[in-house]
Image 1 (tube, rainbow, N blue to C red):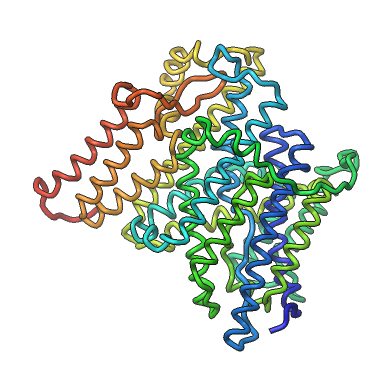
Image 2 (cartoon, rainbow, N blue to C red):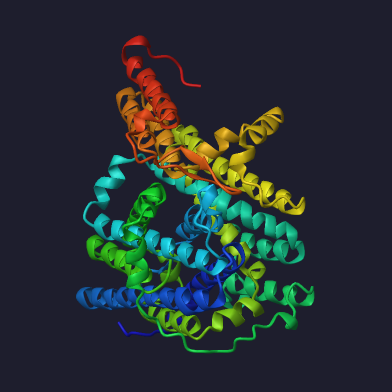
Length: 539
């Protein structure tokens, strides 16, 4: 099999477009939501992304060539690889944004009292820590991936992932779609036609490329993008450099323990998701060894962290599709070269200006819809209620974030943005409760939401299967995580609520005790059901 064939060009456009959309999202979220300065975004994060994409894309291309030589075949397609979309959003909204807000808080209100640049750097450093943790889990998971997948019900894994996809990805971009309907509706229509309607454009034009091209044209003609917004920095080479000092600066801090409830589940999801995509490739005729494939995926995320990127990598879904286009090994190499070029030269700034995120947001919205749908399509029909439970937790946590954003905006508009929430928490709780919004429950749900979704969904699966003891065991796990503060406990800060990890024995803390006892009480109900109930009809 040759390194490059005609089909690699088609495969390259598709994979590069997927990766390019991730870059546009990174630029939009890091620059807009997190407020990172340009030198941090273009000088550190994007060069780190380039290193992580080089590591995986070149390895998987070599792996495909090697498999072709070993089997004597000429139709072997490399595993697709890139930035993990769900981890991207989880790290921004569940890790880096809370750190940034706490860093800006005054010291007397429990914050760090940092200036905006220092707060951005700390937020970035903790993002590196989260990426490193995910990479280590991905690497270690290569040795236990199969056991991890068998221990956790599929509905629990997929619905937890779907909760993030439906809320933090899909709903966020659905709002942007309605905010720019001419661009949003048109591109969404194209994506629905191609990916859900199962049709192709004449001439073999990739649907994603057509959607982005049409969206870009509409963005310019409707004034969404203008020449006045053109970046002024110019093209400049930003060499990837290691940031070991920044990683080790926060490695031994409290942040590692604080965000374990995000890092561990996301790392496990990356392992299991990549494993499923390797199986998908095998079903398409390309049998790759599981262990080295997952190990390199983890190495890519570790390299990302040490070279400045906060965003883990993953083996992408869609291998059969790229193979069907005729892609072999070369499309992965082309993707590595292209993504490196746009990341280290700062060209992403011009691409983000010329091709606004609105032009590609339909693709991200589609990704969120597919992940959400998979929670029901890839699980047993009788486990659908368990999938709904996982979704509810994710949507609830996103609703909590929206509520906090609204409260901060209202405070800023009214000129009271300097008020600490800790000073007005009783009034805030009572006022919202009168409107049937129990914000205490929303804020507690937000902390450790990934663990919560997985535990409640898994327990529901085993209740449906009438394996009540196993359901009770998952509740005990929830009690243990709540007791040590990895779920539900939160502290009032300066215009935010953050996870509250008390350094003392947790059972002495009423807040931690309350949720832990709740999980134990639910587990006791399940356990006693072995003797106190008889088989009846399911509803």
